[in-house]
Image (cartoon, rainbow, N blue to C red):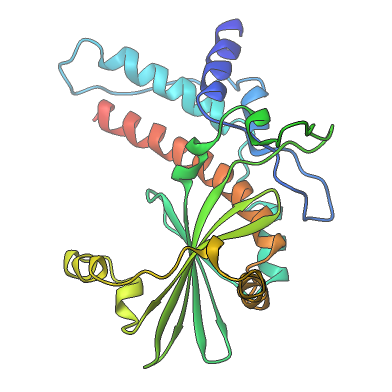
Length: 259
């Protein structure tokens, strides 16, 4: 057990584990709490066809890690995800094995897409790095790591606007606002579209805009559901998905090595 706790501690130190701002009525345990649960011992039976001499030990260790991570894993969608989706008009698209997640919805004659990635979980450091000088964290709420979210608002035949934001501690901070005359340039990921985007004017520095204009852009997003609730949801979902992808990775590696 001591070696298990040491392994857990080392993995926990490899990325931040922050508590996002509460937006659900009922309290819930952080996603990473499962790593402190006792490992459930299960028999390991694997047939090996590979001639490697390390394969059996590696598969055994992968299976051990997999069982440990699955010990308290939720089989259904977490309550905080259900509550967020029920309280908002977004649809969630999350493909196992991919690091990007999207939220989509309609608003009048607009199609709205919010794209974010679990890669941002590595952007965090010690919790006190996110505190302003002289500021102290509250006892029950630690600063969350920043999550970048790209919001695209598209109108048929009218082009699209892409607004890059950073969600942290219940706030959606706008970094840039770009307009595309052709909607496909806001969404298409081809090399040709990327080349065409490089030659476009991306807009002014948002922080240099008139403060009233900045405030109106913020209200523009709030009307479309890009608000404090979303800012609180994103870091929590990134932690949840990173854990889910880690378990999937362990299972895939074990299956491949033992084949």
